[in-house]
Amino acid sequence: MRRDLQNVTAYAAGESLWGLQSYAVSSVTFLPLLLKNYGAGNTEIGVQSALEVMTGLTSIIGLYLLYSRRRLKRQLMLWHVLVAIPFLVVAGVVNLNCLKVPLALRRWGLIACWTGHMWSVFAVITVWTDWASNLFETRIRGRAFAIALEGMCLAGMVGTVSVGWLLARYPGDTDVFSYVYFAAALVAGLSILTYSLWVRDDKADLAEEFPRPPKFAQIYLKFRQSLAEPNFRRFLVGRILAGAGLGAIQLVPAYYRSQAGGMLSDSSILIYAMALPLSEAVGALALGAMGDHNGHRLGVIVGTAFQVATVGVLLFSGGAVSCILAYAGMGVVFGGTWVSHINVVIESCPHEHRAAHITVSSLVLALPAALAAVAYGWMAEVFGFRVVFAIWLVFSMAALVWLVLRVKEPRMLSIYRSQRGRMMAGIISPEISADRRGRFS
Image (cartoon, rainbow, N blue to C red):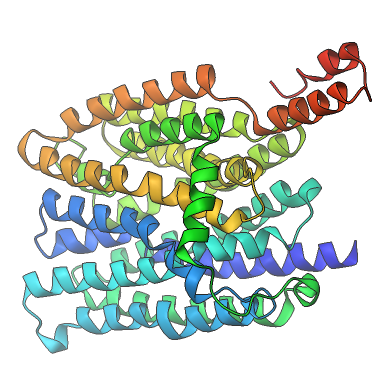
């Protein structure tokens, strides 16, 4: 019990510090507005979005770089300090006005730095998720992740509002963006220090150690075993549809900055975007607790329903209230995605190599999302935002219907298979099996 409390507290503290900096320099608000200040078009923002969602393709790297279970915590911390965080420092340097970097080069330099940062973080995200899931028992994992996400979101709310205040306090001074990047790098370092000092990974000493990285043939076999699971395949189809239904969300601040969206100022958009981490915190905690008791499929469905409503707000309205409602809706969508999605993936693993199972889900989802982001950026440039939002609405509604009708709760399937095997062995009666089968619907 004491170990659980310490890990939940320390993990939530580390996630909160990471959230403070990640929301401050978010690619959903901060980066698109910075790029727009330097004359970026919607196509460039679409490309930036595509490069970011392609991070899922890098997740396989971590399986080969960080394979030692006993040294995994130390390796993860060093990777972030030596590889991921320095990209934030470089982004701040590239943006400094005193260097007189040409605007086009500055835009693509910022995109390259953010892409490098996100690719390096997501290169090990599968291994990180597997490591974090081993810190908590199944009975509390959903709530532990939700509490951590709530801390991240509440801290992110502070980061978002602080940056909005700075832009309002120093209008037109783009060096402020550089100072934000430098501060983000410092806070990210403090986050990693928190994990290093206070998270207890005492199970690692008892874990089986692997002397060398897994062979590709072994990983490929696990990929095939994962994708052979029919319900998991149907779940991925639903998530692909949902991804196409809210692709290139970096276009949202560009929309509210435009005449169609109400011509809001950069500082106003950032302050209104405070609704995103706030609603994400509330939604994630509620969906995490709900999922622990009733299965996490329901959280994915609720998040997708909010996605439909959010896209409806974008399609049919503009201005300050619309901006607040849209970011609030996106917060619930993100909360459902992070807590509920990852738990459905974890609980649907049909074999012992959970990291490979998480990785194959990321690989399958990444490429369609990247292609959609590029297409949406181009369409926003040529046809306008409304056309893009109308397409989003169609895909979001299709995702909701698919998830409700075609995807089963993984726990229900596990219970059914377990009871079926025991029934065949004559251990329990068919009546008991039939009575318990509908618990997770």
